[in-house]
Each structure stands twice: as C-alpha cells, then as structure tokens.
Length: 200
Length: 200
DNA sequence: GCACAAACAGACAGGCTTGACTGTTTGTTT
DNA sequence: AAACAAACAGTCAAGCCTGTCTGTTTGTGC
View 1 (tube, each protein chain N blue to C red):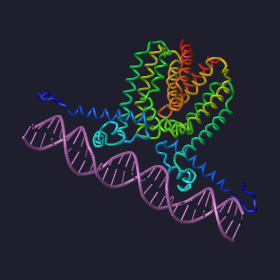
View 2 (tube, helix red, strand yellow):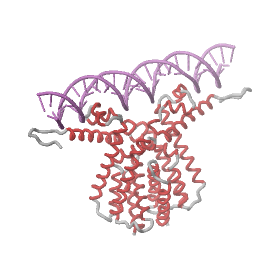
View 3 (cartoon, rainbow over the protein chains, first blue to last red):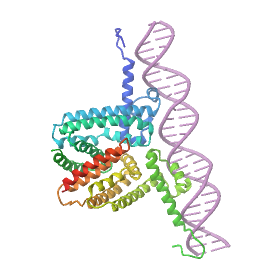
View 4 (cartoon, rainbow over the protein chains, first blue to last red):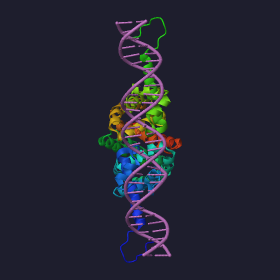
C-alpha cells in the first residue's frame, strides 16, 4: 500500500495505528493510576490527547476499547518480563525472585490487577481477559523454569514453580494496601532458600 | 435502657441496629456478587429491603456506609476464620492449608478483594481498610502459627508462615479468573510437604 | 396525653458517563 | 482534479448515581 509518488506522505493507516495505540496506552495508564472504576472514556481521550469523536471512531464502545487495552497490556507485560529476564543470571534463585517481585510491584501489574478484579463480575471482560492471562501465565511459568534451571520431570517441581508465581501475585496484591518493601524482601529471601533446598 | 412497662416493646435502638446491620450485610453481598464498581447505594438499599430514606438516615454518604461495611466485613472474616480453625486438628499441615485455601475462595474474601483494589486508588477507603486489614492479617498469622505448631523463634519460620499466607492470597486472586480447584489442590499438596520439611 | 426526637419513606435536582449524531479535514483512488 | 472513504472534532440526549429535602410514622420522656 501507499505507493510513493514524489511528495511526502503520512499514510492514514499509520495515523490510525498511532491513535489506537495512544488510546490503549492511556487506558492502561488510567487503570494503573485511578483504577477501573474511575476510568471513564472521557478521561482516557483527554489523557491520550485524542478527541472524543476520534475515540468513538476507532472504538465504538467502551468495552471495545478496554478489551483492546487488555490485549495491549498482555503484550507489554510479556515484553517487560522477557526484558527483565534477560538481565537475570540463570540459577541465581534470589535474583529470579527479585525480578518477579519487581514485576508485581510495577504499574502494568496494577493495571492487570484492576482488570482481573473487574473481570470477575463482568462476563465480557472475563471472556477477553481469561485466555490472554492464561497465555501470559504459561509464558511466565516457562521463563521461570528456565531461569531457575528447574527440572520439571521431577515430581513436585512444577507445583513449586506455580506456587512461587502465586506467591508473588499475592505479594503484589498485598503491596496495594500497606505492604513495605522490606517485608517482601525478607519473605523472598527465605523463599529462595527453601526453594533451593527443595529443588536441589 | 427500655424499662419494661407491661406492653410489648420494640426498642428503637434495636430496630436501628438491625437496619444498620442489614445495610452493611447487603453491601458486603453486593461487593462479592457484582463488584465494587456496580455496587450503588440504590442497589444496596433494594437488596437490604430498606428504603433509601432510611439508608441515608443511618449512613449519610456512600463512603460512610462502605467504611462501616469494611469494619463489619473484618469482623465476619475474623469470625469465619476462627470457626474454621476450630475444626482443624493441630499439626496437620495439609488441613491447615486446606482451611486457608477455602477461605480465599469464599465470598467474604472476594468482597475484601474488591475493597483492597478499590482502596488502592481511593484515599478515604484506604484509610479505613489499611488498619483493619493489618489487624486481621496479624490475627490470621497468629492463628496459623498455632495450628502449624510452628516455632517462630527459629530463624526463617516467621517468613515461611507469611509466605504461606501470601501464597493463599495469590491463589485466591487467581481463583477469580479461571483457576480450577484441582490446580490449587496440587499446589497446596506440594507446599504442605515442603513446609513440613522446612519447619521440621 | 403531649411534646419531642429518632426511624423511615419517597420525590427531586445536579453531575457524570456513555454512545449516537452531524459536520469537517485529510488521505486515497481513478 | 474529482469522487470517495477514512480519520477526526465536538455537541447532544438518555440514563444512572448520589445526596438533599420534605413529609410521615413510631418510640421516648415529661
């Protein structure tokens, strides 16, 4: 598409993609900062610097926008995890846990948390969130197994890795209220020791 | 008060208490069933069988009602945990974990979850939730230590109990999306074994 | 029995949110 | 260049939610 014909061009497909991206990113930001409840379409369009008309053009309904944002968020989380994982040396359990702990304290996780809880009582959202969350869950699991150098063929190992991921999820949830970093650190310190013994 | 004077009496203090209780219970039910976002004062009053006027009389603002419901919910959670704990034999780790796992799958936990997430971005709610959550957190910790027969003077034991509680919180969160009971069971099976070894 | 206050009932207004709708600009196609 | 379609802009009405307000019933104190 967009055959060159001499003059400078700003393909509308590109503009469209950019606008949609800004809207989805603004949605994720709103989720993380003001929560699902206060995330209105008006607030999103203001934040994205997009007119309400343009917003309604690309996403006819709020559901459509949020569902698209869910997919976008999944990609972002996947990318952030992959990037963070690359910086972690293999077989250093405590470092792996630190990486996971940092993730659940990040804004993207908070946005995901908002969506989880909202999806619990919203069928449309649930249908969008469930499969994507399952995907990123599996991806994170695989990644963690690799970094820990764990042997999943041994009985119990798979469950311990799952427990580790559920633990950090729980820590992320606790972090929303009044959990301090120090407490998380101590818990993960001990968990790393226990995990190392159990996986040995 | 309310000196008997022959005829049957329905003290207004009693009526008042009953109405307030029904409103707070209805609030918790709404939180668990439709979520914080869709929990409107109108819905609550309908569900409680209380007129809007009476509702506004007892709780002038929505915040007042929700804050009162938080306190109520804390009491309910505390009572449910204490009751469930009484049915668990001491030193049977798997049974203790089952009890905790059941709790995080219950409606009261879901209501608490809604409040947690809402409180993250709502200062008023946060001020009400934080201290109470801390209280019930400590209570649950003490209770778990007792049931496990754990010796907290030994290094790492305290952190392992905390990790256990955060783990079940994470499992409760996962349960809202698409987590099946079987998966939870396997994870807790394995964690019970690991915990027993670590505490031995 | 009477005055008073608390519990209760329901209508009403203001504000916010959502999505429909009309009009304008900008890129694409022939 | 002209016709067309997509992107963009902003207004408007319907609906819901909250909290105020007025009026009614019921228990309490004198």
